[in-house]
Length: 265
Image 1 (cartoon, helix red, strand yellow):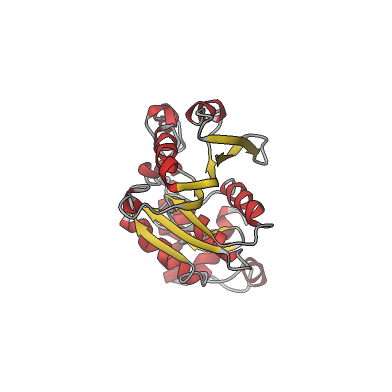
Image 2 (tube, rainbow, N blue to C red):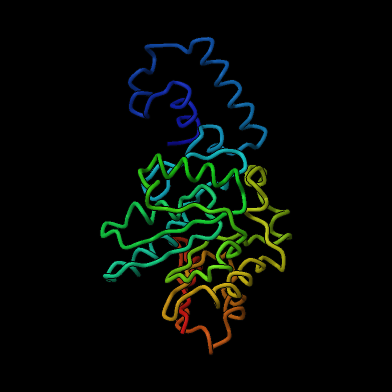
């Protein structure tokens, strides 16, 4: 659906088919007109469409989103699909950590596609707003018993117990300060802490690499979404060949390196 169709369906509480079925047979009530006017005004000011309608789709599932929560992107589906492809032939339980879960879209999508119930999924975020929304989305998608949502600054809540994981997956903030200044207004209405990263966009990759040395099992894998032209920088971060091996990149539909997979020796 285009934007106006999406907005009208929200105002009229119908699907796209219902929207055109009623075309020419009814008019907006005053309440509906006022709501439409408010939504269009907010959209014109640069507020993201997904915040206005309250939800978005990811991996065929519905996710509620709101101010303070990063909106799931289609390119992140490449990341989830890479993890699912890896676990497909495996026939054992795996402890999976989703770092910076946001709306919970990665963790919940993995849980929804875990037909053999092999995954013990932990999802962390430092934001209470995100964790509240993620738990709500888990309930919405019948995954509340499959994902443990925890408040943590990356690995901080696992240090004392020395928790180990077989798989670490993350779509961390990776937009450099220079790139952030050039983003469209609607993207800048999303939480900057979920987008912006110091050190030319590599700050969180370095923190994940450092923590994964202690919390990833031998033979375990890291799956990371990366930004445009970040492949060479990622190679340098994981250049210690005494720890890491078998690095590979997966391109998105635009032919850009979008996901990196690294194995721990």
